[in-house]
Length: 323
View 1 (cartoon, rainbow, N blue to C red):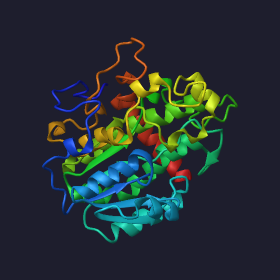
View 2 (cartoon, rainbow, N blue to C red):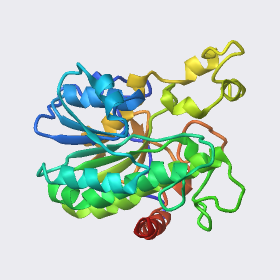
View 3 (cartoon, rainbow, N blue to C red):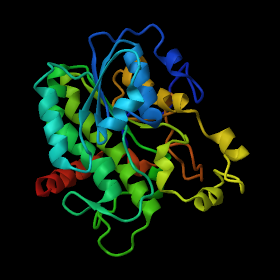
């Protein structure tokens, strides 16, 4: 069953909106936020915007020295704590420490991720992209869910991607044990998982007034591309033969600030009240794909299916118990 409300609304913002526009007039003082991956790329800009609006922001970091350097001098109440999404024990330690020091968690932004990586394993033999992008965040929410439910009116934003179009969940072999590994399809599966996670989490938060959303931030040049060789980005049309950003990519890609704006909109917009679980893009709820080959827009039905979301939640619980 497709998620209810999965259709565009009348939003005053769009593809090129900036954080200060979306957050204009909002005072987040007294609100607690967590932003994974908050020390590079669009995560860094998300932290900057939330802290400027008054939120107390915690940034879990695998590399705390790098995080401290990136966030040094940024205005606002920003804290850094160690956590590695690929290490479930460290995720649980972070969550336990965080929950013991606060009484509420208002905003959780699951921003961190990896893309198109060489085949590798984390956790209990999980494929790296599925394990990091989905299972790491699933473990974080699993540990923080009681706090989120007690907080009431919380919002969780899971960063998905148009990459979800590349693959549904490989239900029989999500960890690519059959020798057929494809780094892009593996990325696609992980981004579908992020979207379905938001659907299932929203159902679990609804009773306490919370909501969860999936967000496609748009194409942005960030460290997310670090695993891609130059020749592959040339073939994709992102770079020209000289290794510079192509004219086509300039027209298609967003700046890092524009890239975080849909996240901020999903985290704060009153227009989304009662519409939890939807997949958003360009500061709006995305349209459902009608089968036309729109590569960078709209959401595929498989990523907003509530039955699949519940199936994935159950599979994730099983995998986490074994990890």
